[in-house]
Amino acid sequence: MAIAPKPLVAGNWKMNGLRGSLETAMAIARGVDAGVRARSDVLICPPATVLHAMTSALIGTGVATGGQDCHASPSGAFTGDISAAMVADAGAAFVIVGHSERRTLHGETSADVKAKAEAALGAFLVPIICIGETLAEREAGRTIAVVKKQLRGSLPETATGAGVVIAYEPVWAIGTGKTPTAADVAEVHAEIRAELGRLLGKAEAAKVRVLYGGSVKPSNAAELMALPNVNGALVGGASLKAEDFLGIVRAI
Ligand code: PEP
Image: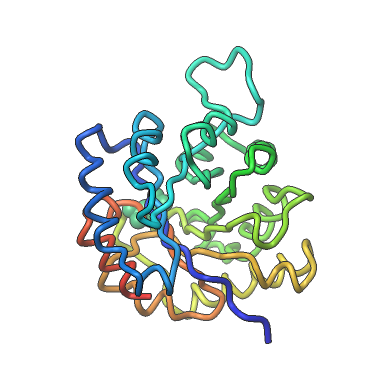
């Protein structure tokens, strides 16, 4: 049996955080001791405006930083956008692509997400590719089909197992306090792993970190993180408070 990849706990701060919130990042870093570092990797994805300052502040702490999105093009007339190279230049090691808020509010398709993930790989960033079904899709019994289709459409052909992260985030669980049952999460993650096997080959698929995201909190993290094929968490709201985020980190 393949050895499970080292878990990753990633905080997505979304559009929250001014320079003053670097103190929250430092409080998180103070809680990431040698024991935590041995068990899992810890990542904060702040707004782009504080990405460079946060990366500098976290040097030597073992806490990495990531962007929340990147443009697919390396440069050009794209007012307000940020290229993958710019995210990397700010010191990030990861970048989230295809978050459901981008897919829904900015109309991003899986083809767009794939192009962004390719740009991220080209800039030596690890893309965290988000996939997940809506409530209507779940109620129609289409969860597995939707998630597999998004995965096939969003994963670059050049992806390697260690070079990408997949985040399964049911859209209806994001920011709502609702989570799927443990059995449902385990089923979807097993299907994602199997689909990765078809796309990358079994050996590479075993190396991919498949995160669960959607209302993860200290009280449910241990159960969710212990499930087979769950290799960490993508955390929104609970990553904004150091104690809550550390509660999740310590649950692994
Ligand atoms: C997210 O936005 O990726 C997320 C999982 O949010 P929350 O933890 O708040 O549900």
